[in-house]
Length: 124
Image 1 (cartoon, rainbow, N blue to C red):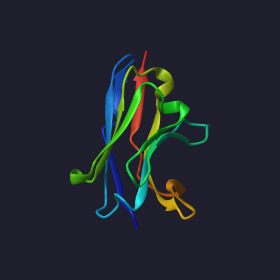
Image 2 (cartoon, rainbow, N blue to C red; image 1 turned 180 degrees about the horizontal axis):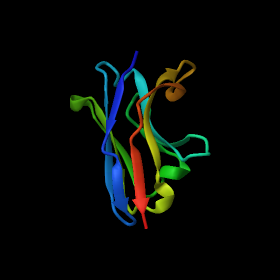
Image 3 (cartoon, rainbow, N blue to C red; image 1 turned 30 degrees about the horizontal axis):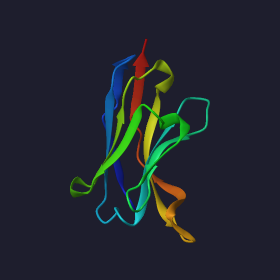
């Protein structure tokens, strides 16, 4: 069982920045993929960025260019640095964990553990 606890949500003006943190249970790094996702009301949850078990980042379209995912293994924490935010980035942001794909260790399997999700609201 992986436990994830996010922090850092809140309101910000357009053009501003925000950093989200996700503290995970011990012994997660190196065994699970970790990632950030977001969900806007009425829409499906979408991937923002993730880290495979080796800590290599992968960015989906939602996260390319303005967002950076990183990890601090000593603190059992991953981060999502978000810059130049727009109102379209307003969403519930979730931290997730997945076991590595059994057939391809560098890929992530099904995302099955989730945090509570802080709300990020960007005002124009």
